[in-house]
Image (cartoon, rainbow, N blue to C red):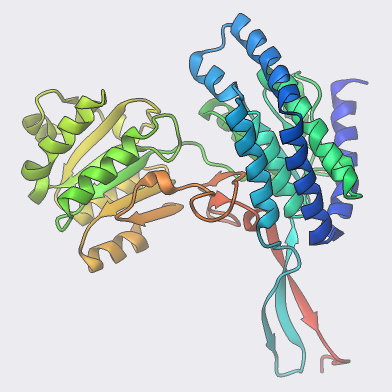
Length: 418
């Protein structure tokens, strides 16, 4: 069977399985999820051995250190993976939830019901934990999943998928509800993103080059974000201690995540007082500062920032800094240079905070909190399947609700339209 035939076979099986999963009750889905978690704990040694095979091949191929880190599974990581699956089982099932039911003058009741999307195709790189997270979220939300992980994680992904299939079968659900694409041929991605008859939505989890390619080529709707150029704005009425803590955590807790702050904006009235201390903290942690002329005057070690720097997701110990006149200039700067992912204001001024929440055009907007909170777990969604910067359907961290849509329902008692 060639790649095209194989992918269409996977798609047909997923479509058929999606109907069974969509009508499955919460008990069956939760039973499958708990069985998957149990199997992950039971077969931790098997999963670590499969991961060791992937790591050996990746090391021989010269995979860069950051990707090797994402590829690596550990005993602690597997325990967290199992716990994450159990957390999804404990979440409320959104499928079938009816909202907004109202009587109309005609006597009918009109409302909306939450329903699965259908078949979700997930394309991701390096991280085998995505296989378990995505399988759990799609299963609980009543969707079938086609998982296309990176070739570097093929052994790990197959091993995890086998346990997912075991859990599904134990609950009387079709194992084909979650399928890992068995081929590492890149042509499989091209077919997956064009099979509109089999796939309802694509969720990419990977670097900018992968997502750029999918944006250009996909014929299937996507839930995606291209990059995460996140900002922290220190307002005229900021608390200095909060400002220092929030910038430190937003930028330096982890450098390679999409919710890490890449840009710092500081109101001019506080620049002389706060910027040297913030800069000293960043420099001590090894962060390179690229700033505007006013920043250069206050921070000797800073380098000049280019216009491109203000629009860049560095994913590294680098931050762009700009002193602004106030909230108007800050909002304008963020909406121009940001990626509409996550942006935060540090302010004790209620009016300024509310303006920032309303006017900053991003998926997550925060007041007096670190940008690093922008993920599904911290938002109470359990695991997340990704983060969306789109404005239609899902926006921000995408959990169970983001993997469903709503349809209109009408309840009547024999009414006819006159």
